Every structure is written in structure tokens, then in C-alpha cells.
Length: 412
Ligand SMILES: Cc1ncc(COP(=O)(O)O)c(C=O)c1O
Image 1 (cartoon, rainbow, N blue to C red):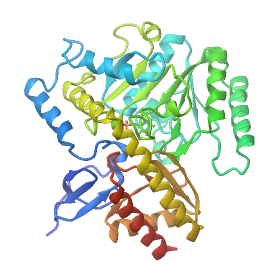
Image 2 (image 1 turned 180 degrees about the horizontal axis):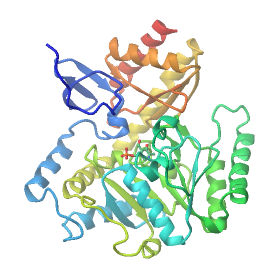
Image 3 (image 1 turned 90 degrees about the vertical axis):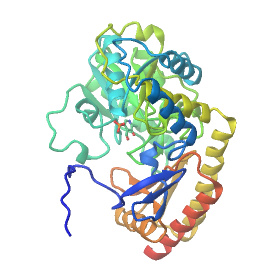
Image 4 (image 1 turned 90 degrees about the horizontal axis):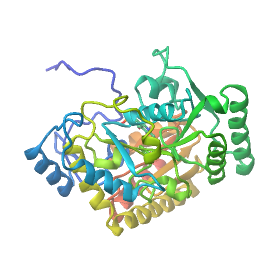
């Protein structure tokens, strides 16, 4: 019997699986098979699938308010969530705006930066991914496929180089990238026209590449010198993914604006922009908003997620499991030199291969034989990325490494 799909064909899918439910790091298909989910909703299911505390918080909130529109009145979870985020956010960031997705929040960050500086332009970096809406697409340079066919994209976005992690001389590579940034400010967008720089501290879709510390510090220094705002896009790297609450903590820097989404609410669509009060004061009232931003069920999910994440054991697990994973992959790399680099922070780990076809073959083998769900990343699709739920256990990492090892053996 053939069935007709009424779903849009625009979504690509990395597996053909139809799932009925999930628990922790596992998902169960409608035919009853279990898979180890190391995609985690693309680095979203931070506390695992259907964490009982998060599920209970959402269910309880649904009995009180499903939607309480922020322009009409303020519900009673908005201030508590903003206060919690102020405790966790880096530096002097103490003021929050809420939306529903990463793209909305990167767009909001740019809108705020333009209003606060009265400057029109934004600088992004090669390999960046900031979302799929028009402005976010204009700021996305990780793959042509995200942009092709959608022109014209909004103007005023300039692309500076991001250091190549495979370059043999990393100091020279960082110096070259910073020179590229300086050159951009001299040749295309003068500092007095440049509102903001937006950077993923760990490049996500672009290939799971932690920014070299000297690169980030060089950029922040230049931003301060020129009055350009520094926006950290922590949509993917935030909320414990890298073993710290935010990836910028690894670098000891304080962004002017920070973008949060994905892991913040364990999968409930929720996003936050954090900034300092003095900058937020320059955002004219009513110049930005949205129907669902600050949704009470999202706030409940975020508060429950934060409660789980602020247990000291939580980030300790991310760091221990991240080390176990990287050590295990490095051991396999010794027998499989087709892996050209293993890198990452916490449970945001990238494995770069010599070619994309090998990544595709390994991923397929893992899925079909190892019942392990993995995804790729990188402009050339040569990076296999590891982004399990942050509650992943030692045994689950071992299972994943065994499936990966078997796939390497079968496909190399
Ligand atoms: C760094 C980064 N920014 C923004 C986005 C866009 O988020 P969303 O898909 O929720 O719009 C993503 C999504 O992968 C991301 O990784």
C-alpha cells in the first residue's frame, strides 16, 4: 500500500526513522527499535529526551497558562527566569529578551546592535551559521545551500576569515585571520559604520571548531577599540554543551550581547538574548517583539533545565564524558589515519575526515549496524560531529565508540 505524504519536502532528514518516544539518550521507533541518539535534536535535548523534571514543569505550567502574551501582561515566570539567567550569564549581562528560536535571537541581536550604535553593518565569519530567516541567512556562510535561490539577501553583512584549524602554524593562521578582519574595516565597512561582530565561540555547523583564544581576544580588543559590539552566538555552544555554562567562559571574555537557544529549555522552543542594561536602554520600546516570546511553558522548561544544569554533577559529567569521547576517538584515529583531526570542547566534539564520502559511509554504518544516530558538519561535509544529550553515561559513550570503531573498520 502506498501512502501519500502531506508533509513539505523541504526538510532534509539524516535518517529514515519514524519515532514514537524518547527517554534520556535513546529514541524508540514506531516499530519498536531503539537507537542511541547522538544528534540530540541538533544539540538541543540537553537534559535528554523527556526528562521527568522538565516534562513535569511543562505539564504543570500548561494547567496555569499555555500562552500569556508579553505585550498584554507579564506572567510570573518571566522575572525569575531573567534573574536566573543574570546569575549565569558572563560579565555584566543582566537584561534579557525572549523569543522562540536561534534565528530570531541572532536577528534580534543585530537589531539591538544597530539601534544601540546607530551604525548599519555587521561582520560575520566564514563558516558561520546564524539561522534560516533572511537576515540570519545573510549572516550564514557555512554552506551555499542555505543561501542559494533566496537572493536578494539583506545587505550590510561583511564576511571576515575564520582561522583554519588544519593549518600547520596556528599562530600564523590567527595573525592572518586578524589581518583579514583589519583589512575588512579598512576596505569595506569602516568602524564607524560597523555596529557589531557576531561570532560563534565554537563554530557549529561550520565544523565544530573552537576559536583559537588569540583570535577571540584579538577580535574583542579590536571591537573595544572601535566601539563595535561583540555578539557571542551561543545558540549551539551555550547551556553546558562545551563543559561550561557558556563557551565564552573558556576564553574569559565578556560579550556585549549573547544569543542563547537550543539547550536552554531541553527542546521546548525557546531563545534568549542577554545584554547589559545600559545597552538595552538604547533599544526603543516597541521597536522589537513577537507574539510568543517569553512563552510561560518555555520559561517553565528553561527554569527546570537550569535547575538540573546547576547541579555541580551536571557539568562535571559533560567534561568527563567529553574527555572519554575524545580519548576514545583519538585511540581509533591511531588505526584510522583517514581521521585528520579530533577537536572540541566538552560534548561538542568534531571528527574531521579526509573526505565527505567517508563521513557519509561511517554515519550510515553507525545508523544501520550500530543503531547510533550521528550527523555531519562543515562546509565540505567532512566533519562528523558528536553532540549527545549532556546527561549521557559512561556506558553510552562506550557503546557509541564501539559502533563508531566498527563503522571505521567496515568502511576504511
Ligand atoms: C550558532 C547557531 N546560531 C543560530 C542557529 C539558528 O537556530 P534555529 O535553528 O533555532 O533558528 C543555529 C542552529 O543550528 C546555530 O547553531
